[in-house]
Length: 113
Image 1 (cartoon, rainbow, N blue to C red):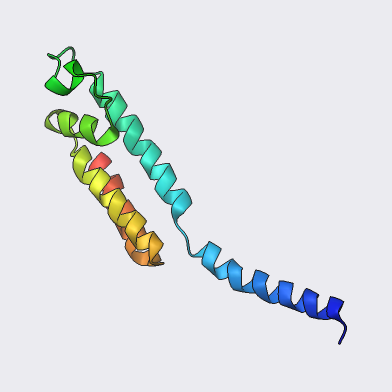
Image 2 (tube, rainbow, N blue to C red):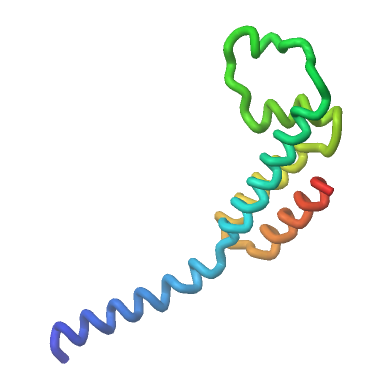
């Protein structure tokens, strides 16, 4: 067998081995749901009028999605829970557990309703 044929076979084997690993990822679904959560937090943040500045804001700390979610939890859905569920979905995706990832994403969607 020539070295060109061996190289082609090796490339084919590598491509076939990589395909299932890529197919078993829910990163795109996580990104889509994360965007929905971020949009919901931002929409909810502007709908309740003005509030006094927090100590963190007066010190110049930049808001994060989690800090906004903690403040907005009292006005609507439990955004902190949604972010925790997204973290669990990412953990399930890292270990390749698609069922757990999809289950956590479904729970996030339920929180947003």
